[in-house]
Image (cartoon, one colour):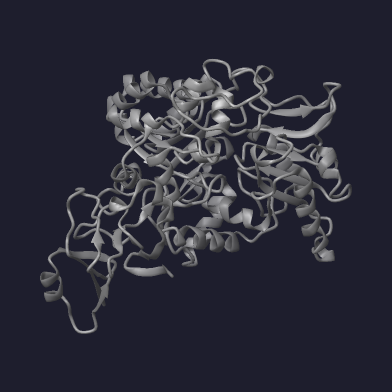
Length: 565
């Protein structure tokens, strides 16, 4: 059966001025794009028409980077995104603990998405704060960035985090005033791994968060529901460990995926073995799942002051008010995060990165590489330039810099010459723009997520949410890239704004290119897959400040409606 869509704003994402009258979908593919009369002439008995009534029809949104399974797993945790003080955090955790059944009484209590920038105390909790929740049950809270967290005294005990335990390379444990006793603060994945081992539940967790007692199938159901209601038809599991890949493969085999998922095993967490264990997923979708390549993490988070920078962060002790960006108005306080050293630090040594890159190139696998700081960006660019010196044809692998938060203009030019793709975390400007001004100063802070510079240099750009760090809300991301306004209402580097059309391409046609799927996704053309989204209005004629108010009315995957309001 076919469906003919008409009487709406149809954005094919091929040309900004292309506005066909109708689109005909049959058997999961787009059959016709053009005049309504021609579309109606192709209808057969049983086919139907959908009058869009002025709504907008676009290609389905493509998530260029996120963590689908982790997003769903966080549904099993206590959501702390809205707490505004440490007392409120303790209360929320106590409420959850009190309603647990006796059978779960000893299971770790985990809270997620807290943000010191929103807390009255403008600090992280300590183990002593979390001990107010329980001294018998391990309590752990994960920062919204997923790069740091805090454990209670019982959590530290079960994880063997003691005064004698040294900081791991690429991470650290916070210490109390004596410089030895752990205070509960835990920074970056190598340190968080200790908590994962201490709290791990058999069969639970992912590479990014400690073990959780949640059914992966339920986590996927919850995550897909959220993604689909935001119009996303292709998602990513962007730091998969072997257990996550196994869970996704089981879901795909059971026919439980309502959208396409591209998984990137994390090389530092047994990623290479995932391709050996699931050769059927290499390059080809099976049940909506494929392995896209490998993920590498090179540094931490700029709001945590653990992103690896080439020059120091602003000294905290010399600042009592938010830094002002030149020629931009606005006020607002921001929390100060502890940092382990003046410039952050790398996650991998050069030789470790070279080994991972060589393995990926040898296997012909795409690499997506997490770089928040400009020093981490330099490490990745230099490593890829060395590959191209040996094999210029390696650019066909479409290497990606994930986040690209503080990449410099000179580095952007080198990325363009190397055919590297920048997947930029533009919505960071909204959530943490005020913090970036404090941590990085007015010049670097206003240049965060330099999308305009990247596009002007000829770089291919995509935009992502890094869910569960921020919601999988594409319209919020588009609004953030177009307006660059912080959560406190402060303009952040207005010269880095992009147009609505450019932002839409970044989550449709250009995102499809990043995945090597530009011949089947990202545009509305005959023969392409019918992955579509219906919005309540045309983004191209909507005032920029109102873009985040646009609602998704319907999400269509391979011609089948998978979400409808």
